[in-house]
Length: 204
Image (cartoon, rainbow, N blue to C red; front, side):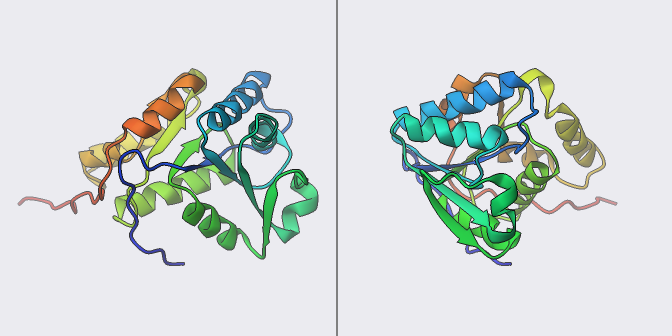
C-alpha cells in the first residue's frame, strides 16, 4: 500500500477520523466519552470518519454525531458488516478488505483521534504514526488517554527513543489529552507541515 505525501494547513480541518474499540463491554465511561466526542464533532461542524460499525465506542461516537446533526462517513469491510453491525442511518462505504478500509479512512480525514481500543485500534494507530514518521503525512493525531490507558504504548515509544531506534523528535508526531473536551482544541493546536524525523546515526 502506498500513499502520497499529505499535509494539512492551519484551520483547514473538516473531517476527523476516530479509531476506537468495537466492544459493547467496554468501560461505560469510555462509551460516554466516545458519544461526547461525536456530539462535539457535530457541534463544531466536523465530519466524523470511522470504521462503519454500530457497536462499542465506534457505534456510540457515530450515533451521537448523527443524532446531533453531524456528518458521518463509515467505511466497512464486507466481511465485517454482520459482526460490527453497519449503521443504516449514516453514509457507509462497503469495501473489500481491511487494507482498503484503512486507506479510505485515511484519505477522507484531515486529522485523527485515537480512543481506547484493542488490537485493531492499536494497529491503526501505529501504522498512522509510522506513516507520519516517514513523512507521508502531517495530519494531527491526538490520543484520548483516560486513566493512563495508553501509557504502556507511550512507555514503549520512550524505550525506542532511549535505545536510539527513533530520535526524540518522534514525540512530536502526536498529542495526548486526558479529557474528551480537550480533543478538538488539541487537534487544532498541532502544528501543520511535514514531520520527517531525522535518521538515527551512531557517532563513533
